[in-house]
Image (cartoon, rainbow, N blue to C red; front, side):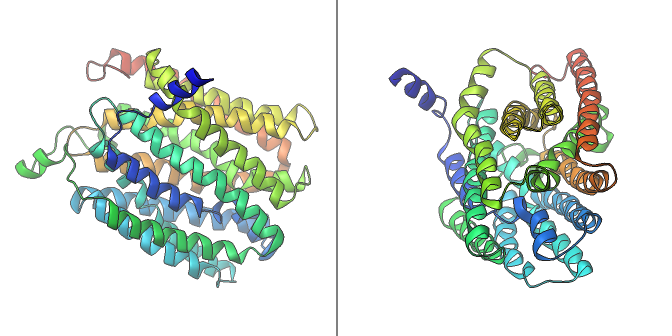
Length: 408
């Protein structure tokens, strides 16, 4: 047991102080992110919106995310990641507090669009910050630690959020989420010393950027298509899946919170050792992305095998395994494919892929369920994931032939 503990701790050695501070602030931010996992339930149960209306509200969520990540990527390259992160956290916190006072369908569409536009400017900036503050050779583990902080907060947040909903009300979550974002912004401003991206300094000095823009890089565009399709299925766990837990398996909000806690808890305990082990096995970033897609596909198909509610745990564990394997390596692959001076733009497009997923996924999932039911929706998601797994293998072959990438 002592050896296991020592090996686990060793996985975190060598990471910079700044990465630990970024992770702490990210944890504070995500620990309060109780609204998002329960947003679809809130819109149906508390606001009385229909499933198609919820789908359009979540589409507004995705459009706001798309605009926010694009603006965040541009601002990261121009004013720096530090200012983007602080402003995004602070203004996003204010937005979460104000969102609870909106009652109309169109008002909620506009409100969620503006809120997520501000909040998701954070995403490309945090990737560039991880690259900037990482020591050589530690980028993947640095990203993994930040993801660990996200998932630690995400595991605690929904658990507490479910209990709060069951005992108090939905609206309490908006206050907690908003205040936690403001605290995270203040904490970052106090603790983290600004630093210029080491890869952007030469380009700023010479007023030149290497390589081509991300949308002209064919391999990167293929990678983004894969990420959009994969994200389209993954976002079901944030909107359609909670409704499935409640409507098909009759779980209460606190039990749904415990199920989501399982996802975050497993990631916190096992992701860093798993990533370190996979790196020692020299698994390529593209193939890790492939296996992440495979396990996510399995998480959907098992739900149709039985009506036993225990299958929800199995599905959650399979999705979690896919997330643990695929997400850190896909983040690192995107950073590796980004030329000097363009990391903000490349990571902005990478983050925008998840925004596109929100636009397509929530609305598509809600309408599929409304028209064909949950079982047909899970079959559709499984089939889509099989197709993009094949595309990922094709990307692997293309990258393997390229002389630009050594760890593809």
